[in-house]
Structure formats: C-alpha cells, structure tokens
Image (cartoon, rainbow, N blue to C red):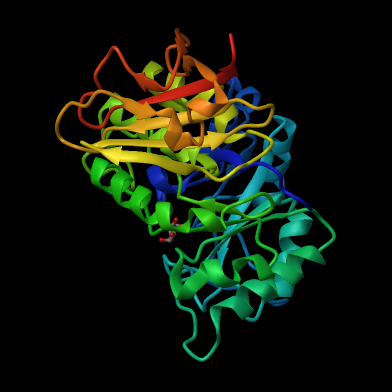
Amino acid sequence: MIVRTPPMGWNSWNTFGPNINEELIKTTADAMVENGLPEAGYNYLVIDDCWAELKRDEKHRLVPSKEKFPNGMKAVADYVHSKGLKFGMYSCSGTMTCAGYPSSFQYEFIDAKTFAEWGVDFLKYDYCFKPASVNGDLLYKRMGMALANCGRDILFSACSWGADGTHEWIKTTGAHMWRSTGDINDSWQSIKDLYNVQVKLQPYNGKGCFNDMDMLVVGMNGKGNVGVKGCTTEEYRTHFSIWAFFNSPLMIGCDVRNMTPEAKAILTNKNIIAINQDPAQRQPFKICEYWGNTAWCKQLEGGDLAVLVLNLEEHDITPFFIFSDLGLDRSCAVKLEMTDLWTGETLGVFRDQFRAKKTLKPHECLMLRCRLTDE
Ligand code: GLA
C-alpha cells in the first residue's frame, strides 16, 4: 500500500478521550457525511485509546469493551463502511496503551489479524510503556510486518512523538505517517510549539510516509479532552494553514456533530486543502523571517507556488517578501499573479516583490497561490 498524499479524517481523542462508544462513532460517521467531510477529503474515522476490555480472550485476542461497544467492532466497522468512510483503530507498541489498556507488545501478529478481521483500514500505533530492553524501531518494524501480512490494506500511523530519533528510522518500518511532535492541546502556545518542532523535521517528510503534526484542534473552542484555553477563529485558521502547508495529515479533533460554521468553513476550505493534497508533495522552504514576517514557499504540481506568511508575534505585521529570495531575481523577468486562498480574492500581478495592502494582526496568516507569468 502506497500513500501518496497526507491522510485525512477524524479521531476521537482530542474531544472525547476515554468517553467513546458505538453511538458516538455512528453519529460521528453520520455527521461527517452530513457536513460534506468525505467530499472535502476526510475519509478515515479513527477510534483512539480506551476502546478495549482490560483482558484479552482465551485465544489472546483483544476484546472490545462490552459496555462501550456491545455489538463488537465488526459491527462498528460495517456501519462506518456503509457511510462510505474508512475505519481506524488504535493500539500501542508497549506493554500497555497510554491510558492503561491492553497493548500489542508481543501480540503484534495476532492483533494485526484481528484488526483485519474486523475490517480496520487504519491503525494508530502509540509508544507508551515500551520495555527499556527493546529498541523502539524494532517494535514499529514488527507491527509494520504484521500489518503488511494481515491480508488487508491497513494504513500504519506510527505515534512515537518523534522520540528516540524516530525521524532516522521511521521509514524502515512500513509506517505511512509518523507523529513528529508531542501531543497537541487546544491553545495557541501548543500550535506554535508544534510548528517550531516541525520546521526542523520537515526534510524528513514526503510521499509514502508523512510527518504527522498531531490531530487538529480547530473548532474545539476549549472543550473536550485536550481543550485547554481554546483559540480564536483566526488562530484556528493559522493552525490549519500551517498543518496544510507543511503536508501534515489532517485529522479533525473537534465534535463534528456540533461544529460551528466558522470551524466547518476552515476545515472544508478547498483552496487550502488543495495545498495540503498537492500531488507533488514538495518540501516547503523559508523565504524570509524579519520584523516578525515569516514567509514560506512551496512549489506545486503544474508550476504554481504556494506562499504562507505567518504572524507568530504579538504585534501587527505587513506581509512582505522579495522574489529574489524565491530564486526569481530580475534576470528571470517573471512576475507573480497572486490569489489570497482564504478569501479567494485575486490580488493582482506583482514584480520583484510582494507587499500586502492589509496588515496581519497577531497570530493571523496569509496564504497565497502564485502563478508565474511574463505578461
Ligand atoms: C498518546 C498519544 C495521543 C493519544 C493518547 C491516548 O498521548 O500521543 O495522541 O493517542 O496517547 O492515550
């Protein structure tokens, strides 16, 4: 199985933590469809930690919680599939999951087979309680082999938070995406922290195995399992822009059954999602960073450029960059026609440099699509 663009979907953890059950998953699947999320690209529905009974069965198989999932997981998977979605689950490479439930250490091949039998299409695989005597890379390799031989295509989502030099070995494991950062929470500080970690790890991102900056907090508004302070709509827009621009998987973390119109508009913005799902999946490069004006560029399939200008500071900035910092100096005689991807507005054709008419307030961003032209 080859994954060519960052996976997209919804995950239960950010909002619901341990409070998951069959009804929640079914109504979430319904809400994903009603809100047009699959059309926007979000096709995985993933149950995170806390879904299992504390004991395996007599054949050492994992058992879904009888209280939370009384009809078993196959029934849940069937329902999710009937909605045209793919079904994801969670386990862990250590002796317990992070929340203390049974984990797959030394049960990898049995568990991969069980997941395949249930109709699982995606496995998030955590790193808590790893025995100190075993190297983490071996545990991810082992589960990678178990999944590749389980008889079903299962997307392997590694979640070792970038620990133990994950970037150096993750592509040897069969993982299709890997958590390059620690856990997110619903605050501007967390978004900024994860961005700063990601910048250094970006060279390791790419087709086949994507750097996962963690689930989105867009629309949580301070509620739920990792809802700390909450963010403003502008901060959520910048958060989504960064994740999209940096080719991270886009896994929604809010309650999609009760999304605000603002959250829905951010999460389903086609222009921004297209920058994330660009077939070329090129690495972004920093154009400049001055006076709090941080600008990034990414080459797109077909020849356009995407530019992201971030205001990570606490004062207003005027988005500005010079084309020679993109490699386009005057010898090229190339101009750039700019479109603001959030508003859809065409900003005109620019020569040598770009200076925005509007300033960005603290934590706002501007995302542009630039068409090269000699007219
Ligand atoms: C870790 C992961 C989170 C979540 C929890 C569940 O902290 O990084 O994304 O899966 O475990 O316990």
